[in-house]
Amino acid sequence: MAEAAMAAQVPPDQDGDECLPQYRHLLSPDLLAGQVAFITGGGSGIGFRIAEIFMRHGCRTVIASRNLQRVSEASKKLVAATGQQCLALSMDVRQPQTIAAAVDEALKEFKRIDILINGAAGNFLCPASALSFNAFKTVMDIDTLGTFNTSKVVFEKYFREHGGVIVNITATLSYRGQALQVHAGAAKAAIDAMTRHLAVEWGPNRIRVNSLAPGPISGTEGFRRLGGKWAEKSDQFSLIPLQRAGNKTEIAHSTLYLASPLSSYVTGTTLVVDGGSWLTSPNSFSALMGIASSSAKL
Image 1 (tube, rainbow, N blue to C red):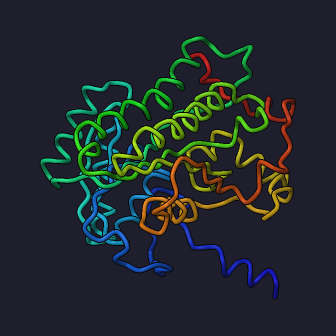
Image 2: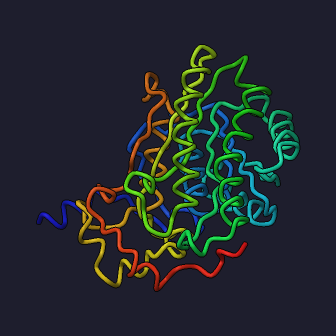
């Protein structure tokens, strides 16, 4: 009975980058009606599901990525499933000029941007001693500089005068010094600091800035690359207080909260959505070494 009750609380999800075959609204379907969200990394994984859930709550979206084919295919799926508009754009968060062009295109199409989701990221498992200088820099460039670049461009082109909401997708890696994650942990910790600084500086412009830190989330590239399958097979998730991995819909619902009027007095904080994982999960250097990525020589 208890297991059935717990299962009933977990929203359904799809493993791949596919829309949910059915969706039950826990909040008003028009929660974001009339608004526009600009989502980096919106063509896959968590970003894709955030776009879908926002659209199912009345929001039009812009999904931006370096891979135009990926976001174009994602856009078609999202429009078909939700009936809302979704504009697919190519940009590189490391190159401010491409961000400016994408934001200009979004404003030309929709005349407004109300929500910015900074979801573009890069990660892999690697010990610091084997991490190339360029690999560390690449993650910092995409995650930290990319978040600042996109936030600054959107601020200058729209938020400064009109207000808005920024949600930065971060991580709990730095809380304990997670093994094999010095690059991503440093990048995400910097974003959490940036969240607080921007919340203070941009609050008078009616801009709320928050971070959301997911735990292990099934059906994502990160889950595959960062040892999710290994953790599943070795029963590591039983050590998480909620005794399971999370799913993309759960992250999207939490992002919906931070982006919506439900959190109208919330700014400068990090919402951890990890089932309690960082509090209890083992930090096993030796075990993780067996699945460390060879992509560390970027």
